[in-house]
Image 1: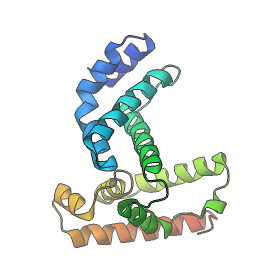
Image 2 (image 1 turned 90 degrees about the horizontal axis):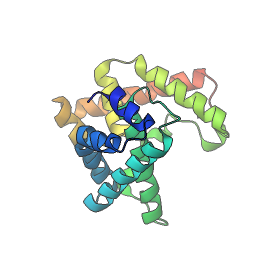
Image 3 (image 1 turned 120 degrees about the vertical axis):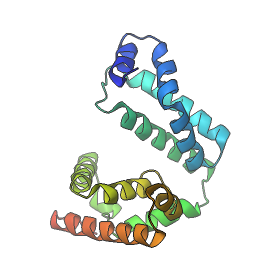
Image 4 (image 1 turned 180 degrees about the vertical axis):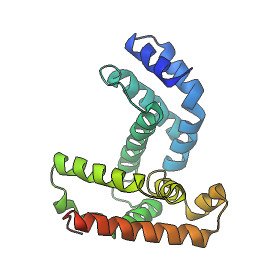
Length: 185
């Protein structure tokens, strides 16, 4: 079933919307969640919470890209679970990713309110749209999906050194773009 048909089922408050979503996206959502929270059972719970949020948000929201809508909700749910589960502890993977991005993202005091955060997100989105497809995919796999350098290299059929170089160049380009827009890094 097409995404527009699934969304129409949500608007009709038909529970088949959840079954259709699970049939189309369930396996990928579960893989992503399990990898992020490092537990299959918790990953399944996060996916179920994503379906519940989709049920609560559609309507009134009509997602333009349904898959991205689902993965974004799932990512936030997984990260909230990790925050709760690891309160007082630091995850090496998340710390590593955070430290990589700290080199090119504004400090928290530079993004004080929701409006500035939205502007920053729009700017990063525009930046990514201008990049070559391979570089954009590499960046998203690393910083949105949390994939390791080795996973990205395997999936792209390229060497790890190329992945590292691409990410390094992308971070530097992003830093320059943000500085030109007046963000304090």
